[in-house]
Length: 550
Image (cartoon, rainbow, N blue to C red; front, side, top):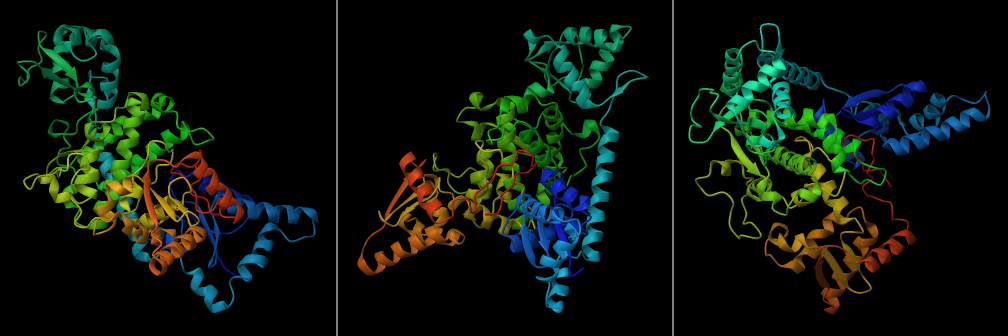
């Protein structure tokens, strides 16, 4: 065979599984590389495919595309092979038309056949990461248990959920010690109240319940005391369903920030995908009722253990906090549902992050303006979020990356994309290009000599241009129109006329384009065959989200 077929996939990706099944069905030999397991291949994939999502298929140096393009190509060969039984098989057709033709000369084919080859160091690193992660999971499961009776052990999460359901709705916020004792005796069949009190003491020690009121500092569980479940203690702190601390035996354990948030993103993406219709609309009420969301609410508490103090590399820091922000936003909308979420969500909902060396509380605003914007002034208060004495200032990025604005998620969309530390710069470039190339976001009219930017670019203009001049955005945005030939030509022509004929380009800012402008753009783009290029396609079955090629 004149070359090699490479399929780049990611964890829990339905489209990746579909393509792999097609290749196996038609006996097409291929090498599979999981970019989550081998992050360096993600960077290479993005550079060669100019696309962030999986699967991506290469036939030698030729990039075929994602699931849609590959499926179309295979169907074409399948139909051709079925016309005459004597015709070549699908495998032979691909070998003839693609691998051999595009694999020549031999030297070039050899080079490209090695393009995605895994080095010994990469394989060794992947094994080490997997072993470390498995070891941590075992340690956590070992300590994550409550001895209910001599015969019965339960996880802390199971006991917390049970108590949340058993205690009467009238006391949803707190309950008395005697009510806790009665509940424990009823459901765990304790033979005496002393046994129930002893178990209540264990619940208090493990942080499953907390004493409130004037005696809140007491470490004794008493029938006359008042108690609140940990899961109800700080409802706006989204990862506080349970606590990991010295009492649970894991306070000295630090989890890898990138691996932890990656695992949580995949869990949330699966929940969102299950509640997304064919039009890409998310039913957050359905997502909230998904049993997997209950598991996620417990798993996300592991962020209390991530060791963010050791993150010194700017790209790693940027990657982690972009992912944490997007995860928190989706988490808030599933937990509270959009109609119940107020505008103050950005400074009200929080995550606890930290590890053994200390824990920090971050709101979405803290991450956005305090960290990702380098502790720049908040657009409403005109004040920096972190003072010089605030320990969280240690996490602020040293340099503002304007592309971060395009990477932060929107609750209106079902896509939950995971950024990767080894590929984050390429991923941010593509995010900016996709955003600016959308005909619903950036309006460029050469005829009217006018450009309409999204309103947020005026609010954060100093992040895009050093002089803070809104007109300078015209030059700044040009680099993001690289794949939008029509609008790039328009903008270049307008800037040239402005330079030579003093025809000043009108710059406006709007939250949303009006319908006539949308329709005009759609007509123009259709006429030049660019309508479907470089747009985001929301695929219900894709766990992370896909961007199909044009």
